[in-house]
Image (tube, rainbow, N blue to C red; front, side, top):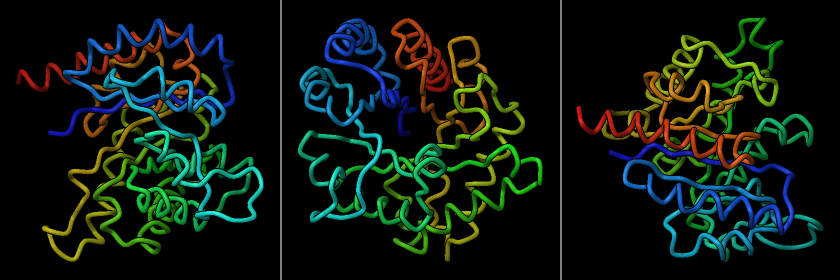
Length: 264
């Protein structure tokens, strides 16, 4: 069984000193949890070298927050998948809601980034989710299926065999709001059902083995409840990943959940 996964997304935060202080507190504690869970952190691009060096030989993994869909060329300010690979990035976030909404990344562009990440032998973490207006209009499932379909159109259903999906309701990111347990379980189930419905045969169905993590104001006070939900395979953590105590407690909650599953 694949271990549950916890990813800390630092977003556009940090500096050399703060990063070092945070990592020095996190690494000794998180290393103790690796028997049960995988843990990765996604720092801003300028700090990849620093974090890569700090995580070396720890077992903890490095991720990136975004990537260009282009391999090289006149794309000022962009970073290619091959560049990220040189820093030994294991995961790359693609389609985070902030990229989709603030920087107008289309689902087609996200799909091209997804393919670029896999072509560089890294694992894309595909972020999907709906806005509050879309949920109110009863369009949650439609929106997420469109986001998933863009990947299928780009690389085929097999692309999900080496990928992670992160469900992040846009209205719950950084707001303190958290989707209800029934809402989270329903969406995770619908993601698997949609992918399964596109599979020509059971042997070609990646849905049951696909890790689906939840992101949206996860914190130490609600982590255990969320991680115990059916179909939740870990978390994508934003603001709380910048607080050592919070991220450690969230990691411990996921490890405890994974440990109980193993013992059963």
